[in-house]
Image (cartoon, rainbow, N blue to C red; front, side, top):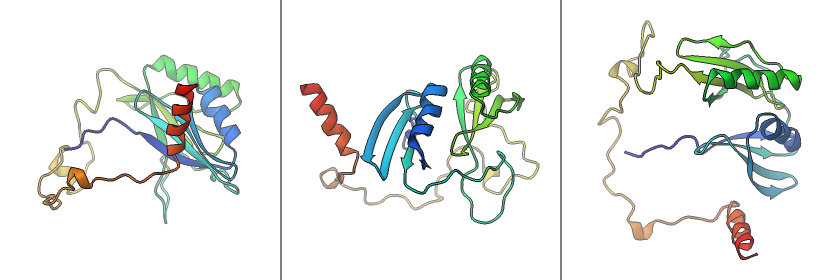
Length: 198
């Protein structure tokens, strides 16, 4: 079974990369670690943690989302509600809340969800974001729990992957046939090599 290390990156879109950088890097303190592309098609990456990044495509004509409250039900085509960023402690929540207020961004009060404490806000693109501090004695990853009054059929089978649901791999790709095709990120590798050789 593959071992996941976190979210390599969440890919969002913006029409104003500079406003986006000022919010995520300068206000929230996430390092800008890479930028690819050119005017008209950029892709920038910011570091959330040792394993996780958030990235933004900048395309002409992209407009901020219509504001939608976190977790508010909708109908029709839809695939994204909000992103929750984990923070180490509740003190971090208050620090972020104070920074958002000082910069004149709306931020909710601290909400006690029992297993996490959270605040809610929106970035300059109206992307709904949450910051969550885990209650130390209630880490759901260590002790999964289901309190849905009528769990779905699949949820009733428990938290672990179920064997036999999908066809087994019978012909894995041989190592000598594994190929990677160059993407635009190859520019980063070239730039790093030039940086090293000075």
